[in-house]
Each structure stands twice: as structure tokens, then as C-alpha cells.
Image (tube, rainbow, N blue to C red; front, side):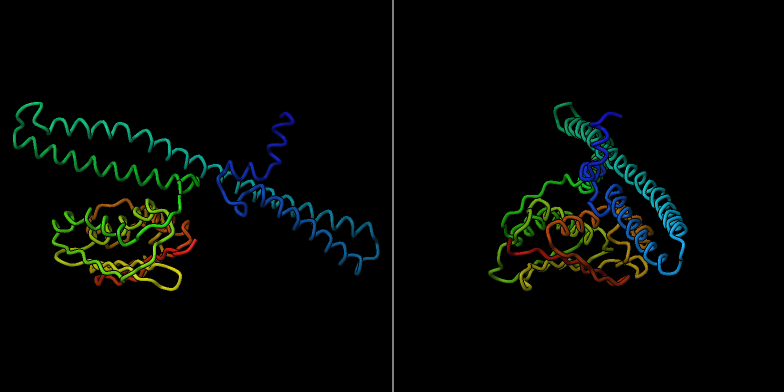
Length: 316
């Protein structure tokens, strides 16, 4: 190992950047903290030892033994953390690479299918059209999953771009509702939207907020069985805009509610109904809102529905 590599190993900030972890979770930084704790423990042991043991040699030996034991324990613990951090980094890179590589073949499949379903190749039998529709639906599902995986990878590696500007949360919500209205009507679900007049502009990233709203609206529609309605409301609360979406769906069991924002988690009652979904939408929503200095939460009761909400700051 040359001098440059040694200096690189000693650079705590470079190591934390490599693992893509905040400073207080980074193994090299924790190792330094443990070293400080060991030094303090050694000094404390020496002070206490000199008060109760006459022979300074014995005091020094005790201090050395305590320091050595603490150092060995901390070394093995932090090495374990380092392996976990490295595994997490490799996992995030793998997801990112796979997501990028999958986008091209999926796009090609989608383009080829659009071409086959057009009138250019010639007449298509009715039975063939049905198979093409099934293929199209599954390609769309794959595109959504790959897109979610890519966003999660960017969130975990802190590479998801954020550009905070002022924008109308009401206008953004209206656009999202228009996008989901055909899907909602097909399931006999009505989307209602209310908002206070003269609402101030939100200060956040509109593209990322759009992702949050789309995930919440999609969940509200997807987890409703039969004719129902979804109510959306925006109002000003203090220095924040408060977005709320209420559905009359299957709700979330009480024992599952503490896991609802975790990656890939899906409540048991949802799995029973075999509703489609990756379990990434709410994790993405919470990560984005947290990054935008907002808050997100929910209230839910099984078989009665759920109310999800988030806040966004008005001022810079």
C-alpha cells in the first residue's frame, strides 16, 4: 500500500462518501469516536486506580488491559459495521445498474408492441389483440417497477436530484387527478378535490412532489374494492401547506402500521386481495418529503379506509 492509499484510508470524509453514508453512521468516523471513548476510559481508570492502588505499575497494567480489551472489542464491532456498509453500497450499485440496463429492453419491447398493434403490419385478429393488450399491461408494470427501483437507488445513494422552486401545489394536484381519472372511472371511483382559496405557493421540487402525489393517489384508488370515492384536500397550516388524501378502502391493520413506510412492505390484507404493487411507493414518498423538509403521516383503520397526509414549507 503506497502513501496515497494510506492517506485515502485516513480520510474519514472520503470513506463516508465511498459508503454513501452520513458522517454519524460511517464506520471510520465511529472508529474515531470509539478511540476517543477508549482514551477517556483509560484516563478515568488511571485516576480511579491511583486513588485505591498504591503500586503505580499495577495501575498502569490495569489501564493498559482495559484499553486493549476496549480497543479489540470496538475494532471487531466496527469491522462488522464496515462489512455491512460495503454490502449495502454494493447492493445499491447493483440495483442502479440493473435498473438502467432493464430500461432499454423494456422500451424496445414497448415500441415493438406499439408497432404491431398499429395498422402498418397488416390486419390483426381479435384474439391476437387481446394477447397484445396483456403484453402491454405487463410491460407497463415492468416499467413502473424499474422506475421505482431506480428512484430508490438514487435516494439511497443521495444522487436523486432536487431543485427547490416556488410552484402551485393546487395546479400540480389537478394535473395528477386528470391523469388518474380514467383509471378511477374504470373502477367506479370518484375523485373529489377541495382546496382553500388564495393558497400561497409551495417551496419544493415540483417533479418530486408530483411523484409523491401520484403514489398516494394510485394507492388510494388501487386499494378500494367496489364503488367509492377518494377525497383530496389542500389547506394552509402555519408556515406549511397541508395535503390530505382520504379513501374508503381496505385500510391498514394496526399491527402492520409501524412498517408501512418500509421498502417492499405490503400489509397482509392487501396480499390477501392480490392487489398489484411493489411496496416502494410509500418509502419513496416519505424519503422525498423528508428531503424537502416536510412531514408525512397517516391514520388508518382496517375495512374503513386510510387518510395519508404530508406538509410542504411555504418559505425558503
